[in-house]
Length: 89
Image (cartoon, rainbow, N blue to C red; front, top):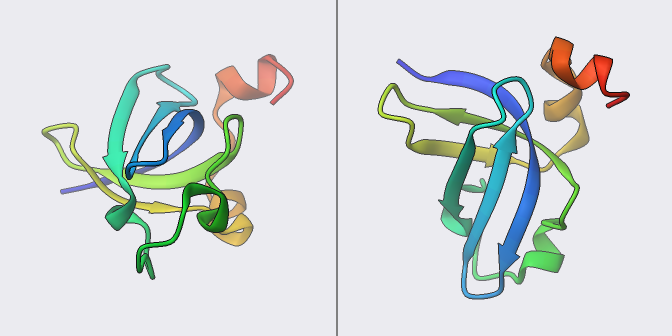
């Protein structure tokens, strides 16, 4: 079973690896660009992966990222975590 969440990109590598921090738990997750729907070899910039960008993502019970979305509609469809609201995010 996977969990849907919101996170913030904290590091991006042009070799196809990025890191995000889950907004509510502050856990860090690594993922490869192929977890983004429609990925076909684009660069991080073309995918919209920038430090500080909010993303929607899902992960397994083993804490493995299963999918990532940079689409604003996907990010906004998930509730804003209490911690992010209190921090002004």
